Length: 137
Image (cartoon, rainbow, N blue to C red; front, side, top):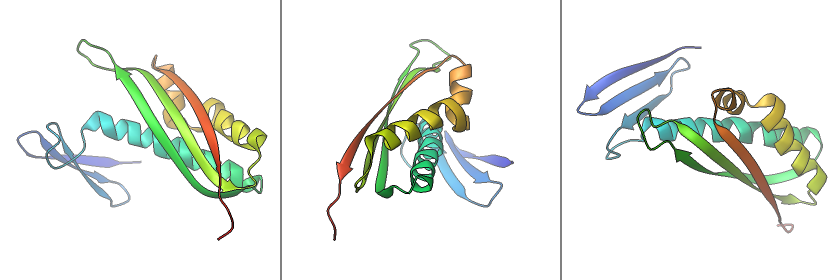
């Protein structure tokens, strides 16, 4: 896996993934995300991918999955994350709570590389979920 980050002046940086996708980062949030926000997005994407994939393999009819992430940072430099909470809102038809709980737990404990890496670095990560029933369209 590779990536490249190029300075664009002031506190702006253009990131380019090894797979060809670009993202703008801006320390002042005028034209791009702050780098630490991107870490949260990476965590959310990683764990959401797991949850949806696990639920689909369990033949659960998932219609939507939103990960809402709240984080706390240290007050001193380096202002690392100290606590992160991921709350999943999983929508679908006839979803079994036991399957959603299992998917969230498996992602947190076994599959989400981003989550496991952050936890090993001392970040306290917690998870919760809610299920929303979606009626037939």
